[in-house]
Image (cartoon, rainbow, N blue to C red; front, side):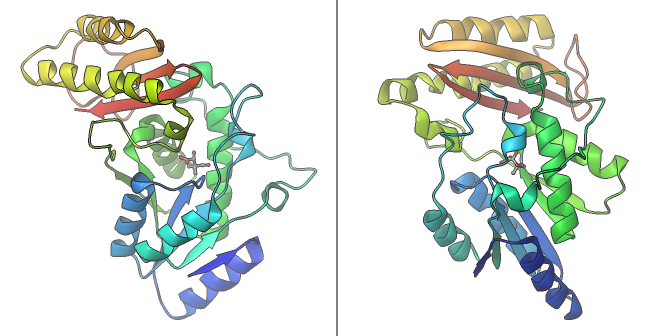
Length: 279
Ligand code: PAF
């Protein structure tokens, strides 16, 4: 397993693989890898001859008051996890490698990005789409892997790939959870012991509501209000949003019919966590 820092090194390596007729998978990450990322890498290793993992905390997707400076980083740990999972290359560029001083081209989307996380993170998806487009152009993968925990991101990337005719298969992978239900996230490391316990309110309220929907509950107002009431019982939690929308086109719904995404974002102390289920 190799770690490279430059676009040229990735391109040279991928060119070699292509000469041998090998398929290439890409797992885009911001590093500080956990079992959620590991599951994406393992799936990519299974599906492709060679796998590239990008490990880049992308400044463009963080708002001015967000956690870019404190976002956890540990390349040695990431390298061990990637190697053990069987991937072949880590691309770990510096921001200057990805964004030259006069960088001025962006990939923006006029649908899907305004609601849910886009409401409180207005520039987030422009940053995600731009960096993912660059990674696609650098690695030219056959397939790319994204977690369903960031369900809106997955829908956005799938739409972008179709709009811009990338010809890359986008593979969504299920949410990986701690034993007690908390969705794995690099941001869980921000939580104090007390906050870690409080954070369980996200998955618990979702699981409870999912069961009610499976038993026949269809009214979206009732579903949203049940989840809000449950979360509000936790003093350390502050709701950003609770929404039920159609999947994967993220349109407002009044009743549950067809595929829906039930997504929530909740601040536990200062840490903003997201979770969801697709039904
Ligand atoms: O999901 C993430 O970690 C990031 O948004 C991604 C897709 C790696 C782009 O920076």
